[in-house]
Image (tube, rainbow, N blue to C red; front, side):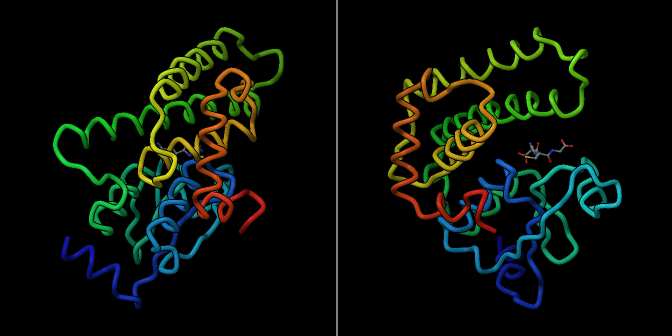
Length: 213
Ligand SMILES: N[C@@H](CCC(=O)N[C@@H](CS)C(=O)NCC(=O)O)C(=O)O
């Protein structure tokens, strides 16, 4: 922790977040930075995941964003970055210990899994020609999304808190709003209300809208 704190506090060491403003996982990190008051330390540097020449592929060989650079050292993925921000903020994102901590981490991974499934649907449209698209595959992904959304709707996180689960779920639902892989607001009205509450309660939501840079 000491070394991380020292690096973070040493303003001669640049801290750069490689992410577009459209990435849902990048948005989760950006919202967390704002919610924790850490955003001034970080410069946003958009990445193009389709560009073979983008240095993102050197920083993260998987070619995925978000990727956090502290000096010339790269940290990814978004889970690791959020864990780092939680450490830096003394538990500002997961303010519990013991088994409850792992319950919350699991809950957050559930919300991230919805985003993963939604991204796979987006990529199906982006990378496959129309005659190659698989309804079976798309249905498989929508099944994951619907089951996970139902679980989160039955026991949503506290919308008044910008903790790990809320930030992860909000980033996920924001992406569903944009890409519309399913009509989630009609199917899960409880989560629709939840997102509206979260958006009103936390300035990090509006500050990270896709129109903002
Ligand atoms: N598990 C990763 C997922 C990151 C991810 O899938 N990012 C997308 C953009 S939102 C990406 O970089 N996709 C490019 C690719 O898969 O090649 C995380 O939590 O950061």
